[in-house]
Length: 270
Image (cartoon, rainbow, N blue to C red):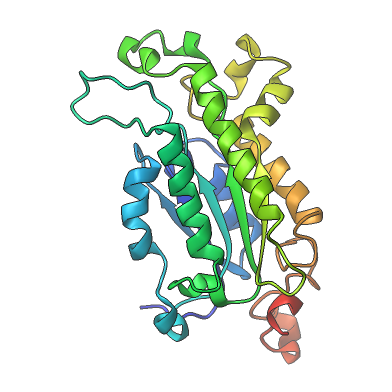
């Protein structure tokens, strides 16, 4: 087993996080940007909603008493909602639908586990944690015509209400940040940003969606552009700027500068 040498990123979500069929997926973007600086752990689970992901949470994040034996988590992306927001269907053998209030409660559980002073998880107690809440992307139902059961489960206006919950929670937790605190939070509004890039909610979304729901390379590029805005603004100086070797030095120095020794970013040295 590898030792906890580099700090890590946890990509926590459903199939939009896990899938790598599209070039420059979220996984590929993070792996390329954070080579030799951060380990990227993809914890995306296709078909999952927040209810089922909540059951997995203790298997993904180590308890506080095990902190010395696991990598420090410096970034967590939380990207659920595409499955929680499906329309309830009593004919489904296994329903993915999660009511809006429960969806909010599950996201709040994730956030409390990552930030609360009395959290039992190690991630909540190490300095330098950053959290990105990501909204579900927009839908284009006309692209789902080949699978009527898929199309009838998803209604844009319903999914948008789940997007609104994500943004509301991000704004709420933003008010809980303190200068001396361990963590910072930001939001990526994939619903709004993708619609803006497509110049509307109509057929222009085809370039961004594979099947009316999952993302193309262009769709993942929207995420990456929005994430980089966080890196340069809300998360500035927090060891995530892969273009700035002072903010995020290579954990192991380049071959021709080994005299520099192994380094952590300033956010983790204090």
